[in-house]
Length: 490
Image (cartoon, one colour):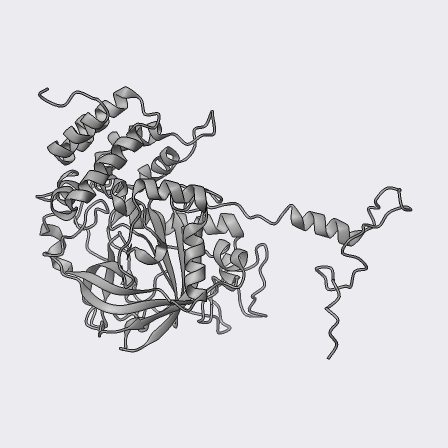
């Protein structure tokens, strides 16, 4: 076998003469337009990037598998969960919400935790975060929330003032912001944090029984976080700390793993539950619905090409499989359109044909053509109904997941409040009953530091009076003192 390396070629496979020199008239003459390889190389170079995600831009990922560890068939007919010991290949992408590519991935932020299960019934995408709740509960406010976390239109700078302006005018954000300002807002690594569906979904078993569920991926490495100063110091030392940590851990053979534990609510419990179970700003307390172990996820293989397998990975909330469906959670229903549309914009109409997004099961439908399409069905019909054996839906075998909606007028309105629904009850419980005394102190320090970074005095006052003080009176007073604001009754 020859030791000679392969000859460089054009993208069409034709050999080229040189990797170093352009075709020119003499040693000092002009470069020629007829140098087709030079033109191809430059043209491809300026088209190397696809549009960034608008949020969850910076991230990393790895491949692995999910193994069923307990019988789940009493709750769902999902094929990949139908047998103890069954393994399903998957890909996970971790990310930060607000930071752009090149931003420090240890910055205080929520982390994305998205999983693509390559099941025998098609891809199932569980698109979640490292927190069990979110900032808003209606998709109408989602673009506004993201805009408030990004950059000012005039200066192009990040701005804490607009973050606190939005948060303090959106009381439903209090639970998530309390988590964000705690140690949980700066996880030490992606390996040392939990992952959550946050949203509520439906499971349906073979008998047609329905259940409301929440996913909890519990890290087996143990929870580890950074303090605010540690995270800021790491940003100066290594902008890619989280991405590097995951890559190197897997390369060393230290494969990170998570236990999947489910909260499962009987279908008929929802109307009278003390919190609205479809409100993503609320958790279901564990004393109401305990954690049920279902399986285990292991990441054991790094990507071979970051762009092809991480940047081009596309997740759709609407990618569900038989036995799993949406719920009346308004954020789920809004995200079911937006996520797929984002991928069609970023990487094209046929992005599901890219290897990282391609399902293991055969695809049979009547979608056709479009940019960069390379899968085709030959002379098969491209319309339905047809007389030539084209694919056909089966309502009996694969009915759409559904729920009953009481007869009501179509309107724009908030969720129907349940008896304990209040935007400040759960963050107050988190502060008083979950966080240790030291964690409470760091929450105060983090909130004071964040509110001190260019936030106008009137918005600081509102954040204390209408936000933190309602989460907990003592917490509000401590933050007020840290900002040198008058405390209530002083």
